[in-house]
Amino acid sequence: MMYCFIMNINLQVKTKNSMQVYRDGAQFFKVLCEPVRLLIIDLLSCNEMCACEILECLSISQSTLSHHMKVLIDNGLVISRKEATWMHYTLNRETIARLLQFINTLTQAKADCICFTSGRKNKKRRS
Image 1 (cartoon, rainbow, N blue to C red):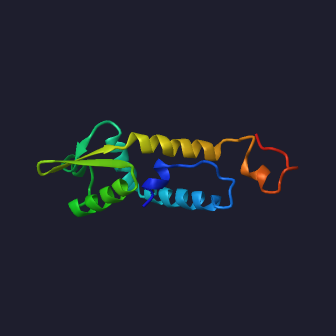
Image 2 (image 1 turned 135 degrees about the horizontal axis):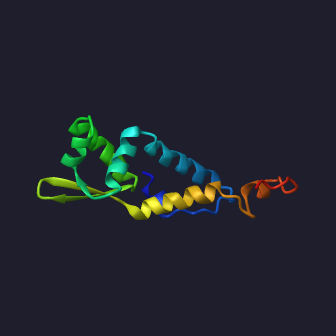
């Protein structure tokens, strides 16, 4: 389950255990590499939706939708709530913000970049 990683993201990647940050990040991106899940995230970007509304937009079965929603919920991207017999879903904006922060930190040039702390101190800095 990646939810804890994203919610408690630690961008200090210069420790001996830093490889775990990258492993966790890679696992999280595996969740996003499924096109149906990206479409679900796009659908939820505007409003909360019930499962029946999501199904109307997709060409998948209810059980397939349930599987994808479970993966998204377990990884903290989507929040669910039950109202009578209906399941309603919304994006977890806090997790999305932390994911974007992780991506920005990972891809930005920085003075304390890992390449300077891993024995490459005399190498020219990329811009």
